[in-house]
Length: 497
Image (cartoon, rainbow, N blue to C red; front, side, top):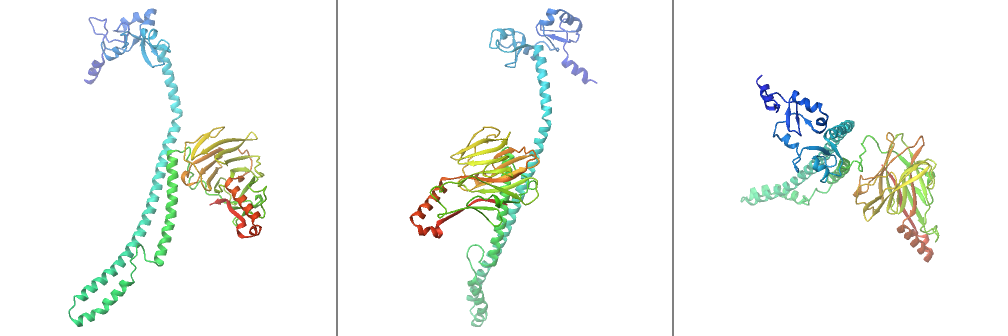
């Protein structure tokens, strides 16, 4: 009960115009610098001039920080305006003479109303983002747990392999060193024997220990034999598991740091599709492997002419799906000696002519996105020069962060088409940029039947020179054109599991 008067006394502001009785003040006039009770406040509330020019505020004690703040620090005058540009209270002199004179000025009451309205709108905006914030929190928690799980799996596999190798080697080394030490100890004990009978009686066992020590292989590592072969196989098997786990962990770390360009497909969401090349779409000088997953490009000196050497038409290879999965997920290894386009197209596409297409195109040192739009093909480009990605955004493709990106061998690409979201994504699988998002397209198929495809065109200078050299040799040495060195074969494309 005693706390209430004490608190009230602490915040009590009396009317400056009441002399005999300390009446509680209702308002303080910032211009008059007095606090007034209800009776003395009536003049300020009923006089139009005072109402407009004398700002009122909640009661403040004379000389308090609140009262001092109501005056301009530069001119010592009452602040009457609010500068919206600099977000500060200003006096009349500041408003008409100083740097604020060309700024957006409002009276205190008007500024209060307008800024309060803005804050209400901000609250609505933040409320609308509440679900997005919850999703971010959920995403962060999930990926933290996922990374912990991946790290745990990698640690467990590594520890298991370490225990296996350490145990096998420790057992082997201990056994070999033990035999060696046993022979040394037996020899020392025999040499300490002075009695002829006792010495000769023990010699047989000493000789046996010596023979056993001689057969021991003291080379580093395991002894040659079945045990060593078995351990090597187990190390390689576990090593492949570790390599895959490291790759998986790397992709998840990249996706955690930069999910826009390093998306991770969940293991059970998009299993690798069972695809083969359609033999009926093979072009000239192309052959297929028995499992229909590898395309070879071959040419011989006898079939080359001066006109055909160094040239190649456009050939579209379509793929057949042998399982019934709705979404698609496949890996490609592509020759660096051709330009190519990969992705989804209509089932009637031939020789680079598509009715509908969504794809990624490689042309010399550039990557393009290719997609159908209003019955036309729109193209966006990425240009790669000296290992750095320089992007030019022509339409829908957003430019990625700069990455070291220089492919010196076959191109390795992962392609994922998610049926639910209608998103087609292309990721690099080359070593230095593994997991990098190359391109993502929205596939508005509208009932169209699409299939995976690869289109090849434009032989590179390196392969053109090989063809011309082979033709020149064949023309110079006709008999050699019939030999083994008169033809050339390389892997054009591999559908990898």
